[in-house]
Structures are given as C-alpha cells and as structure tokens.
Amino acid sequence: MPSKRVVIFAGGELSPDYFALLDEEDFIIGADRGALFLISHGYIPDIAVGDFDSVSPEAFQDIQSKSKKTITCDAVNKDLTDSEMALDIAMNQQPDSILLLGVTGTRIDHSLASIQMMTRALQRQINCYVMDSNNYVTLTGSQTVIEDLGYTYVSLLPLTPEVTGITLEGFQYPLNDATLKLGQSLGVSNKLISSTGTVRIRSGLLLIIQSKD
Image (cartoon, rainbow, N blue to C red; front, side):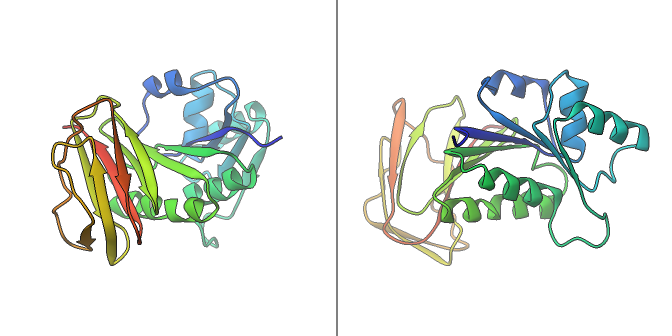
C-alpha cells in the first residue's frame, strides 16, 4: 500500500521543532547529515541515503546501525545531490505528498536546485512542499488551495518563462486572468485575508511561497 506521505530530512537548516510535524504513518528519509540529525534525536530513518561526506566515520557507523536501510554512493562520481537521490527514493514510494526539510540554507545553489526539483514530483502528480523556519513553498500547474499557516506573506513567482490565467481568491491583492513573466515581482508579498485562499492558473508552473521575516 502506498505511503501517504514521505518526509525527507536533508543536511541544510533543521530544527527539532520539525518533529512535531511528523505522523506515525510517515515514511522518513534522512539524506546525508539529515540522517544523523534524525538518529541524534531518537528517530529511526526508514532509509538513510547519500555520500555521507559531511559526517565522521563514527557518525556514519551510527547511521548505518540505527537506520532501517542505508543507501550510499561515491562522494565524487555522482550525478545527483543527496537531496535529489532522496527525492527519487521518495517518489518510488508512490506517496500522496512529499515534505522536504533541511533542503535550504546558506548554499543558494542547493536551495534553488531543491526548489526546482519539485517540478519532478509535480510531473508524477505528487504534491511536494519545501519548508524551513521562515518559508513554506509549494508548486502548482493548475489550481491549489492555500491554507493560512501563520506566515505573513504569500508570494507568487513563475518557475516557467510565463504563467498565464492567474486568478486569486481570498487574497488582499486579487488577480483575475493575469500573466506573470519570469523576472517580474508583481506577485511578491501578497497576503491572505481569510483562513484559505485559492490560486488558479491556466498554463505554466507557479511557485507559491508563504514566508515571514
């Protein structure tokens, strides 16, 4: 039976507060240092994956002994980041959704790559979310309902050269059949005016970023 949700803990910004988000039914993947973070807090990854070049040999042995399964790769001769390897494993579980934690941080290249790889989950019709202490990011190619999760702003950024037919309901600044082009900031810093808001688009891929300072 497919897992309802897969939660990935990667090696970027992580907080013990994230454990409150977990359900017993979640399938948990630790990517590289994310696996060490899990076992250090008493959680057992269903799968630990990565090159583990950011942990000590002793920590790696601990990860292997305390994870249900460990998948390793060469630190140099590999084509995928640890996070993308974790995403591939997550998608193979055929979940309803995937939550990515610890995929943002000081490395903007890794952060952007992690956000962009959400398109791969969308192609498989799997809802994918990126979360850190200040942001909650999702992606739509059609319609989605945005719940008020306590963030201050909701920004809309095109991930394709153009996103057309953007219609917003339940927002402070509504749009009706609008178009956003890559590089435009029209969709930045909107706000919900009720507990939920609806975003509809006709074509393209649109990032929806809930954020706070």
